[in-house]
Length: 525
Image (cartoon, rainbow, N blue to C red; front, side):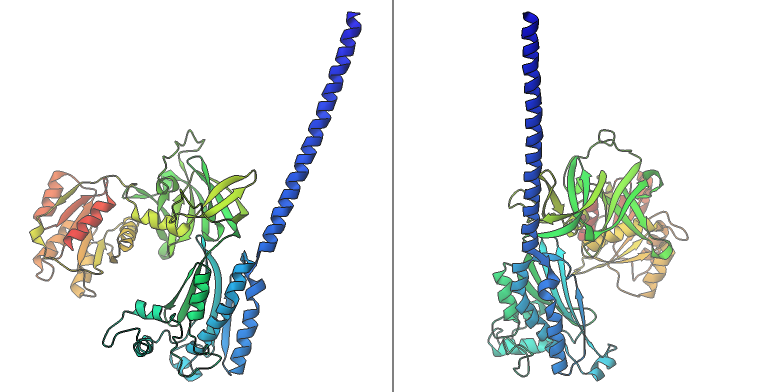
């Protein structure tokens, strides 16, 4: 009897198990179907919202070429970034203002072939339209290589309209803002090409409606740029996923120049920073490595705890801030095309965060702004340890007023020269470099340019820092030229010798503080 009951119970349990397995299979299939449908809905919604910029802005090229032919003007039109997916509504709102801006550039930028040839330009006027993403904003730029903004005519028009008081002198930045005033136009005659007298107020109105901004600026060596900067609600972008301190971040793929994994033991170190040397021979450039954890203010993960080899440096070389940034990370993951949404409204640093993206599994990641990272890396000094500085009495130097002082950096190490030059240029100084004391002395005596301060190494070939300082103090032209010695020789006798020779400050390289260097220079200037 018991055996039969056990068999029946076993049969029931087996049936329950089969039913449970079948239910589990059906649930998994249903979940998969729902996720697939949701993915297709999201993809279709994104496809409807985002279109390549060329879809809306492409016809502008034909329109401006036809206008140029009607005016018997030869143009060379360059369109860039039109493959970038952007919200259709945003592009539609920009279409007419951009056509107006291109016509305006054709009108004000055009010069006769004779004038262009005399200026060394091709006979055809170069017009450009570029669509790009900069951080969390969409930047659309219209350019020409014409004569550039006529500031004197702008000033005259502004005075005639009462925007500038008689006799008042306005700076170029103010004048370039006035061109967006309603009805402001410097065209000699009102016609369909120059904007029917409405000027660039159409562009300013469009930018305001889109919660953005627009600016007019001169280009080098010649020409004008009209730049729209607009909030970017969403766009699909190629992103490089990296890891730092156990967290995943995204970097815009367009800013990534190189991925690097290098043996740390073979890398030079200058002023306490690991240096990456990119390129070869005279074309090589040196870049101090900035750790992503340091820039973000996070505690770094120990290499062993993170499963890393401490002897290997993993870095990303980014194009940022008009130069390059060597960014140290813990790991490199993969490159994905993801929808980038605006940065969160709270808890995000607008200077560093360009937006957010969502990985599969609804995992959010922050998209970092390369320009913001470069600016933070250039300004922070927390990664450099405190240093020692002995400063001479303030009376040894004459006070100087320096809006943009020129500093002569003298060091036989190319890595140290490059790092010091980067620090000083980021602080707003103009920098001239020399490879040793004799090179510096020859340049100073040649009086190629006025030098406001000398920052020199001590141990150099031909003429060391002490010899350079002695020669400067013996020359009446340079006897009061502020001079800072920076060297690895930090013992008391060397410091005393440097100050006795007339150094205004003496810093050691092993313990270097960027802030103290800049503060000292500021005091001496």
